[in-house]
Image (cartoon, rainbow, N blue to C red):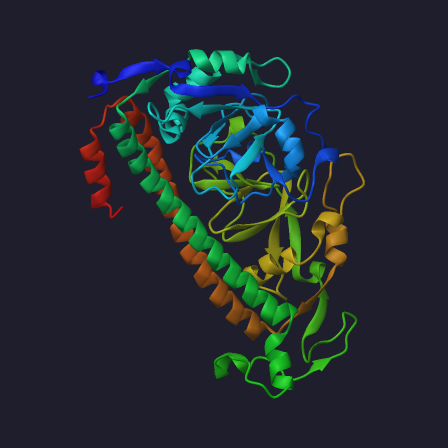
Length: 423
């Protein structure tokens, strides 16, 4: 089937290929609180631009002066400098109608009578497409694509009929939609756990309700764990019988261990750095579940690991003490403390764990901690299952992608494969 497809140069199927603005055209002092959003590399992590990530904005007038750098729904954006190889398109349901690309990007406006933007992005996500895109790369100084606009126009891509492009992108989109649905469901579970923690342990809602003679809205066997009055403490009013402790009373922040990317072995143990997961390894540093705390670079970032894990030397991991065995309580509790401000006095931002240990925290009785841990653990297990399903779906998508784009797999076979898996 793929042998029947013709190829076409980008210049044959694009209405426009253009660069982002000059470096001096967008500066921090030109940002405004609302207006036209600026797309940056952090918005190009997937197939579509990610509207969930915050934007900087410039005014409508400023955007008009940069009209050649304005992009709209259906436009395909590439990174040509820095994290090169990124490519994503502005979907039809994007949050904004108009965007401006940054100085590190360029874009393609598709002739939709010939090619779909989703298909262009899918091609450049394949190994062949990525190789083509990066073949004109310079590694001197900041990695960059030389003459990106001129070069992109010369690249040839396979060009199935539009009907087959739609079928291919529908299959890939089905997988992406399921991955996105799982992400949203996990976001809901995380929000539920955060809301319960805040209600019970920050706002003391059940205690206040009982003190005012109101129904706390909890099953009796849980409501009975909460007292019916607040008392004064060094932190203000807290529930009667609860204690004020320091973070150092509750946990130890243990140092991670050096593990360069080239020294990692293929495995299923997640490796965490100061800003979350950075890879995989075949050996653990700590038994899971666990809590990772950024130490250098992104100090104070809190990450949950549902399984055994490895922590590199830019981070700490939590070792609970006997006074607080609930890891879920610790995870949410640490997020309420401004650990980022407790920095070491050095050129590289870093968390001073001795200062962190001195921060105070209200600690409820162990039986109530156990109840919260049980509830939060059930949500975390569901989130882990959905994350694992998403990993499987992403691997399936990445395996199907080059075969679909090249025509090596028949569309009906791919559709039947997905149907058998309930997708």
